Each structure stands twice: as C-alpha cells, then as structure tokens.
Amino acid sequence: MKTITQSQNGSRIKVSKGDHLQLKLDENATTGYRWKLNSYNKDHFSISEKEGPTNDEGIGAAHVKIYDITILAEGSAELSLSLQNQWEHDTSETFTVYFES
Image 1 (cartoon, helix red, strand yellow):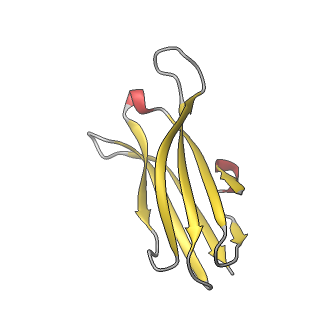
Image 2 (cartoon, rainbow, N blue to C red):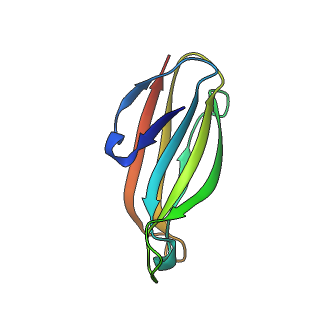
C-alpha cells in the first residue's frame, strides 16, 4: 500500500484501477483544527477515514488523520482537503493531490 503525506501537497500521483493508498495528515484536534474533505469524485475513488496515533501523550498533542483510498476507475481526479477550525470555519491550510491513471 502506497502512503501519501503532507510533503506531497500539489503532487500528481500515478495510480491504477484497484490501487489502495493511504493518506496521512497531521492535525491538532484538541485546538479544533481537523482535516475536512472538500471535494473528490466519488466515481473515481472511495475514501474512508480514521484517527491515527497521537504523536505525543500531552495535552494539545498532534494527531494523525488517516484516509484509506481505493481507486475505482481509470482517468484523472483531484482530492482536496482543508484544515479547519470546526467552530469558526477558519481554514489554516489546504491539501490537494491529483491522481492520474
């Protein structure tokens, strides 16, 4: 399984139908900033999300948000997310990758 990280923001990633990928993004949920899916083509890939491990045990420790992605179709598609404060809807960061097959 191929892993995608924040360092690949803006990248074009070669994939094939049936590929399984994992996107791992750091977030700090205790401050209210969490990753939110903005847009993706549901015909091109399926996505499920889960919480990953914390990077530290202390209050305010960063967490990892994990998205499991399965490529469903050939072609090109964009995946866009934003790191948002849940109650103020402020976006502090965006993440976009482009899948090509």
